[in-house]
Image (cartoon, rainbow, N blue to C red; front, side, top):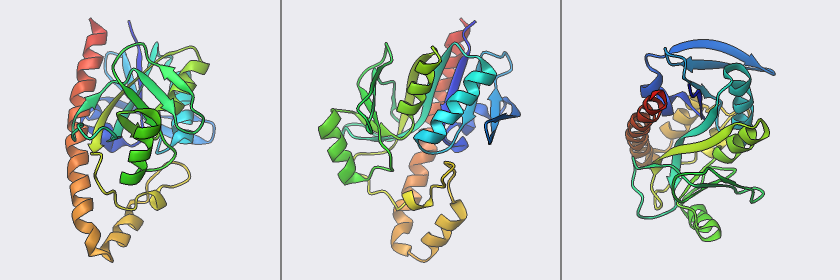
Amino acid sequence: MRRIALVAALEREVAPLVRKWQVRRIEHGDRRYRLFEIENGNAAVICGGIGAESARRATEAIIQVFRPSEVLSVGFAGALDPALRVGEVIAPRMVINGSDGARTDTGSGLGTLVSFSAVAGREQKEKLRAAYAAAAVDMEAAAVAQGAELRGVQFGALKVVSDEADFVMPPLEKFVEPNGGFRTAQFALHLAMRPWLWGTTIMLAHNSARASQALCAALERYVSGAES
């Protein structure tokens, strides 16, 4: 039986999927994680936090504890291709590390995903598309790919568009914690004093909810297919 490890950044990305899954706490290094496991034992989800380092450590943890046959980087991505719309799910054939140019061929899927070290705004998205001919950008997939490769585990990625190519992102970067968490209360306080950001932030929240539903529906099909 295939055993699939899904590595996400934040629980809200995969909440519809894991709502009824079993959950237990695990430790790896100096970090504690919630590990979600499907009842039949063929899939598990870990949410490691935002960014490459958080993704790397979460990948190590789930491989050590769950012993999967494959690791899948899942979650939100920003569109670089102007044709991509919120809620579209992509399974990239190529994942590129924007920091060092390392490339991982997933062996299936279409197009290219580039992992960047920061939340990409509209101008940065244009630069990344020109540099890598990529369709979308995230922050974690390349680190998950590296972690899986180092341990000889098959790697893949399944991402969903949460913000389109021309979307103007609110200032999220300064609220990302060193451990990959997000300072929600501080961000809310920041917004409260800046009403001109309210519309953009509400739209992002709406788009994220749509994206999460679409991603989790695709992941349910993926996990179900592994049972056959």
